[in-house]
Image 1 (cartoon, rainbow, N blue to C red):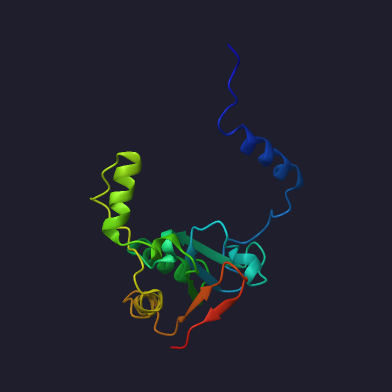
Image 2 (tube, one colour; image 1 turned 45 degrees about the horizontal axis):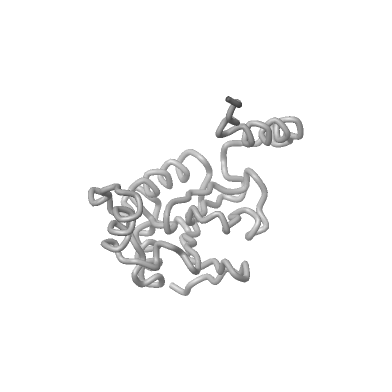
Length: 169
């Protein structure tokens, strides 16, 4: 019997290379550009690169669909009051999996393909991307614990071109 490779050995090896070349020591915990970006967990999105930012410039909050959830709001409160955030971009993207099915369809798909009952979860699918984005922007702007002068914008990232389109208020 041969020893199977460790499931994370590739990551450990890559991290050692990263450590050997590490150059980010000394960065402040605050967002140097005063920016927080709320976006999707989709690996096609490089939030820093697409805005010409570097590590330390912005706080990045990611979840399925780039939605403004209670946890995102909680995190933004901390980011604003403790980490120097003065502006927020909420940025979902084109061809998002969360915009391709209804809530019921996603639950059914997971149950059929994996035998897992996810009915106790709400995935917050995106039926109308522009309307949902506007609603998420409004949720941040109206949150009672966030300052009224916090700059908040909505934008959509195009995964096929790299273009970001800011939506009008």
